[in-house]
Length: 279
Image 1 (cartoon, rainbow, N blue to C red):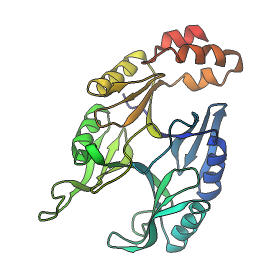
Image 2: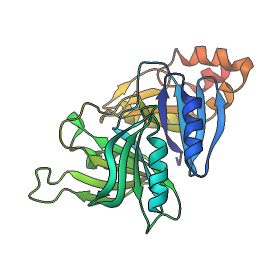
Image 3: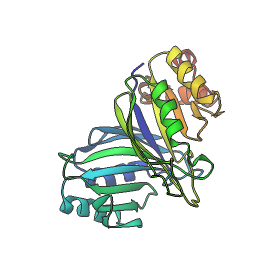
Image 4: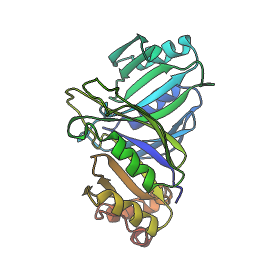
């Protein structure tokens, strides 16, 4: 069941504006599809969805994007662009983990960890990062084990714990893991934070069959929560969208869009055949 997994950013009508902004900043970035509620774009080959969902939810730093840049000049250029109307969560500068690093929140609310990587990055690369805060603090390693057991072609690559003697000893200071061949980062976030996982940034799993939808939906909601329109939360509070791969095709057809949307709004777990019948 090797399915693509990609992030979705929730916007209040600004998805196209945000996608255009990002495509003006990053190399190898382009808009690949759009319809009234959704814009699909890519950055360095990584698929991202922008969803015009309204004012209910906003992105927060619990899910950010690491942007690795090959030179100091490129790191600074990307940082300066992201700071246009944005703010610094961690000012760009030299830190023990990087000679040039900063954490920015852009004008649309999405957060980016911009980092120099001279050794391993031939060009820009983007990696989603999960920060386990609040009630989820200390559960990063547990989550990695759960996610890598659920998806094919998945493994934990690097897990670096806080050292013995540290107040957070044993918790995950930094980790990299693969889901369906896609790289992710996870960390435990010590201290007090006014944010945790939510709908502002979710992860999307596209499925070809009803059996695949059932598989992921059942796994996420067993100790999580069901929501509407294919949305759910897992036991760590992370929001997922478990959707059929043909949904974009149905939604791009103006003659079918309204009927499909009406059917979708009545569903929790998505029924592929019911969507086909509606279209």
